[in-house]
Length: 316
Image (cartoon, rainbow, N blue to C red; front, side):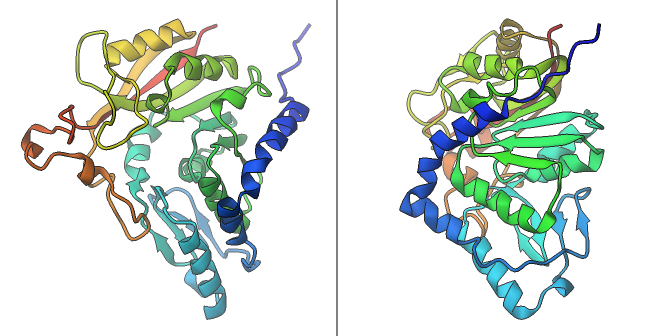
């Protein structure tokens, strides 16, 4: 007797979305939504998700009035943290050159015909890049309205049928029990007070034997330790635990994962994260000490940002 494959509880998901809908009525958020109201209806002549720059349409698809409306909408949704994008010839050079991270990951992935979840997907840059491997379904979640509307703007033109975004957090994944083949959790876990809550909820939405791609800030130590910043880290307030690889392995093992493999470990540089015209705020350079640049420290005296990416499987 074959078991019925798991399916999402869409009634439960709707209730969660209804509860969270109040935030979208706040004046500052409603202003973001208004940015999308006058977008022209255009079918792009081409799309490309296989190169560093996610490209939707070409400049020849637009007249000047249409281009002005689209650029205004893009400008109203600043800052753009992840990219790069090219929308009808308008180049969005985001704070993070996310193509560099994707280059480190892509050769380790097999997403064909998979159901995929991207936790903390931001504006969907990685989701668009996943499409090149022909997944069955890609769902992104992120509770922040600005990045949700950035995605909606891009998807308004791209119209990818198997690409979905829900403005919810990891704690709202209960409608998806044992559903996903592959889960990405990148740049998220150090922003939460309990890494175990994030990992356990992630494990519960994955099929047994499913694959987790986890990327996080890390410290370079052979010990089972994590850095807990006193207040800020590289001028960021919401950073709680930065693990060593050994510590991260223990977190994963205790949360139901096995077969843990390090994919990459790299120091973050200003080639990957920097201030641009599409991000008006301070970036990595402002969080590093000028006096101690040669020894790579933050302005608080901690080791400068280093990031690790690991692959693990959900225990059978």
